[in-house]
Amino acid sequence: MTTVRSGFTGPSKKIGGSTDYHVDLKLLNSLPLAERVKVFDTLAERYGQNKRNIEFSNAGVSGNIYNPKVPFSERAALLQRAAGAHAPSSASFSSYDFYVPFQGQSRFQKGAVEDASIYIPTVAGGSVRRGSGGGYGYYSEALDPSGKVLYRVGHGNVDRPEKDRGLLVPEVPQLPSSESQVALDQRVQGQKEGANAVATLMEKLLYGEPKEETGLFGEKLNSMIAGRMNSNRAFVNEFLQYNPYIQGKQQATTDFLSGMLG
Image 1 (tube, rainbow, N blue to C red):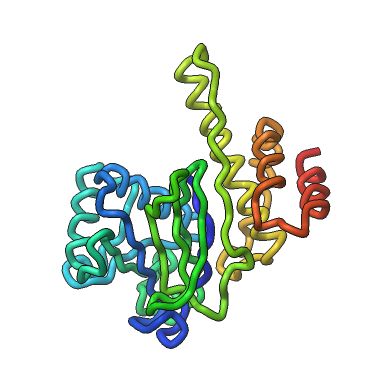
Image 2: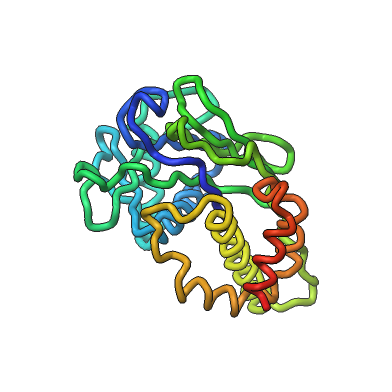
């Protein structure tokens, strides 16, 4: 599971109402609890790369920070309380309200939550579509390969939408059945890191560096690219061919990645 950006937090008048600079994530009710935990683990890891936390805000869970390192039972219990703390928004989805303050800061401190990137998890072989309005501000939906909406994230700033109107998520390549579990795990991990690196580079190339992510494209990322991306050329080729992020920028993106990959 990887993530893509879904705009930025904003003031109430720009996000469809409700409280300034918060995020609203909706998960399909039929998702197993383990899948919900996986979603939040993925999001917490991504926000952590920006030095931010997921901090719930509804009564009963206000101030609780999602920590992917605590035991599963604690993470699951927190998500159940957080879903119960939000007023029902539909019969099909559970909602979670949270902020993404910088680590070590309170969500009430000025500058801690303003204009933060918002992310949504994606499903291999699925897609992401964008929208705006309906009291939800700028939002994104993650669909599975059959077209079913699994996740929604909204209350993004309508003045700062993504440039794409939707994107396709590459399939995870099928591995030989004779491959050992250890080798399979290592290969899948390399593919995930390579996919994240490409997605991050696309954001930098097309959008510039969000101010809270200054320094993200330094030595550590370059080292990861050098060590991982040569084994992910098939993914890169598929990304270049199908991802709407780079429509109209095929040659520029190819040249950029070729220079990074050597």
